[in-house]
Image (cartoon, rainbow, N blue to C red):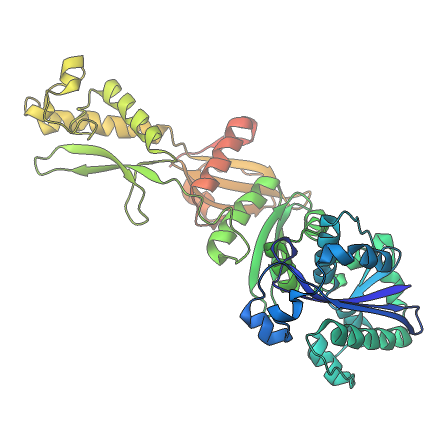
Length: 457
């Protein structure tokens, strides 16, 4: 038995919006045998643009029952049926969410008439309900009202049942099929072709634009995890509706996948990625020469086009590093902007400043120690190669860090004995790095020293 459902709502996601109109048509596989419809008071104002779309205004639902008042009847109609709708995950997420709020746990198998239509009657330019009904000659005199759309969907469903020569409907209902959880516009064969390797995957919209980039130890498993569950929030519902295709790049290791994911997000700026878009160290250590010839160190906000010596997530980290350099290399706190008042130099009082701030030490002598301090920082930023598994058994992956900065990645078929950076660069693809990538690599290097090769210039 099938329950063909359509709803009208106050917005696009169930967690913050209400249902204003619901229609349920029961179908036995041959004909319709019961209909249910009612307006619903959503207990919130209906936006003007939705009133214009559906024709349902606040006055019409003022005396209508709340969802909780009809929840028991709706649950009885649905709980032992197969839930059918055009873009089923949208309707199901709303109905299930509001039934749950009323104390009912709806667990149904689902069928999506968008997905079934693409399989059973392929070749149409659009599979939206309105355009598909027009192309098939299905009348709908109450477009964007629950019963009008539900009846049109029921008519479409009957047509699909009669033309399902390859048994797509029953195949979709098999537990192992997972067809019912896929986004409405994503072909099943795309998901079936996904590899089970580490790598990076891309979700594309209708025009082919990348809208999300992710990484995985197992691409197929990770992609499928996006489609499980019935999360009713706005972000997920919009996300699923926009997915039309998936592409991927296989990587040799999870670290390679993490690096490529971060780089691709920064390059492509996908609409549904958020976490890695703005991960950057906010502060940096800078060097400049003042009018008196003294080299000076300063902590400031990191700026894209300003050359820096070192970066920090927090300004306090920068100040701590600079204090240590001042003591270790006898640098002046006033010339390092660590003391900005007119009082006597605290470094002179503590015995590590030799009086450069008062002109008692020449810029030549002072700058020698500044250069040594910077050199020590550069020693902390080593040049090395990470040598690890490749995408195939006879392949190795390479990751190059040059003076603490990420350079690029690559794959080679033969063992690497080369330690010259200039030669190695010819084997790699340069990738724009950032602090997130640098930290990933340095953390991996500390945990896996056996996979590092120290390099020379």
